[in-house]
Image 1: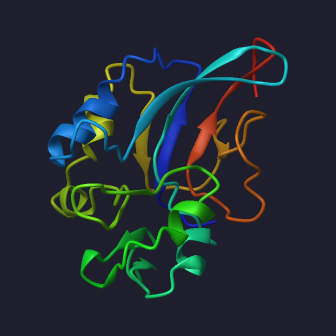
Image 2 (image 1 turned 180 degrees about the vertical axis):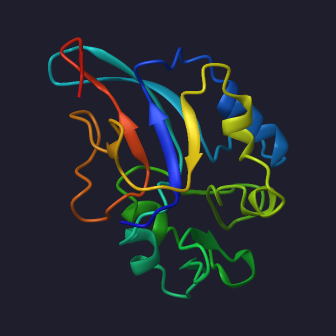
Length: 179
């Protein structure tokens, strides 16, 4: 597993949306555009779970595999999934193939868009906007391996991580208990 990526702890997330708003405003996105989105999801038992989702910077990204132009690619230095607006044709193949719904088409620009993990901020030693904005520290950016209760993004209400191998590590509740 790559040793970089987001962490998300649903056991302490209060669904305030601060991460979503910080990301949206700092990237100059329109009101209906998101790189990170906070939602409440019900599992098969009818229990509600907070989920703050963005690109999981997968090890086997379906969006990259589906992109016919190479606009969606994996950064060789860091291993994060990035997007090149200049060669994107806005076909939507990446959107349809991302099992996490993390890619969208910008209606104003006509190209795909997604989280880039605030790679420019991180290069300056700063946390991604969403991480900096979370009042509960439920979202983090890590540079370490699994452990200390963190595991590959996996919860009963999310798509299986088996095909794309998301680098996001999570802590979730199942039946009132942590997963």
